[in-house]
Length: 350
Image (cartoon, rainbow, N blue to C red; front, side):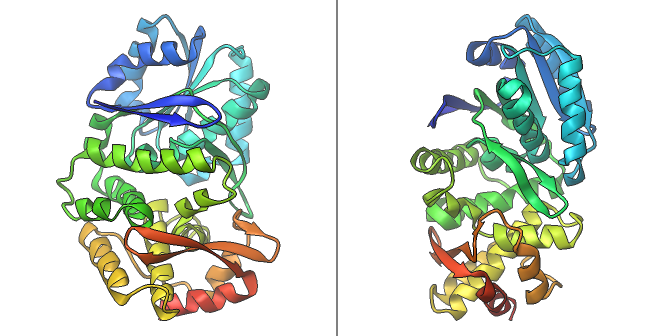
């Protein structure tokens, strides 16, 4: 078992290990206290881990209420958020109680935004059950829902009280869901850790606990320096500007991990064309994406992608922060005019 301490506006532990969901009750009570735990999950995860988590929380003395959404990005919506808030109110949840997110990134984002806004803030715990959520969305305090205009446009920075990452849930993921999470692991390797990038080349045999801990430490360090996404934290968006555009254009039929993989490849190819990184960087990235089974091209054109990206929350006025690689393990933030975005994307599509 590994524990990573996050030092943000709220200090908390990310606990990573095999079978630790059975100890969730003691971890949650120690970190958050309270009498009632509102578990937020989806209709797939509930059949896999809800009974196990409920038993663990009840053993620590919690009364339980459960809110279940349909699996998928479409549930990260304003209507789901309002239904969840009404459920919390009807369950008479108080400010001393706790919301527990059991699931992937959609569940964590929705539950976190509810925790940040219900009664102006209640205790919040993340129990990620996907690789993507474990290495990325469960840590760092970004919570959000989607609007029709774009992804994650309504949200709040709200740190959890503890993150409980049971690697046995990762081990049992369907291959397509596990592969999705690998895209975020590769992202961390590209922006900050060339050795991590090489470890992923052992796919699918790599050590889940070690990979997750390395990603969480990178995010811990970045969030500790820039919690509110004004500087270095923007590096975590490598591949996401184009990726979110791909998701939006596909009506979210293309998953987040696959879209980010496409986004990383497009931006890296553009960086090569702009002589900001070497061809070997793009070649190694594409070879790894191909090995894992992630896409690195898209049928959408540059103008379509640029148009969809204009709603990106990283945009500030006429400027947008684009994360560009210099080499594997090193990316930089490049502020580009939105009028130039289409041309940059076009370079990455050639």
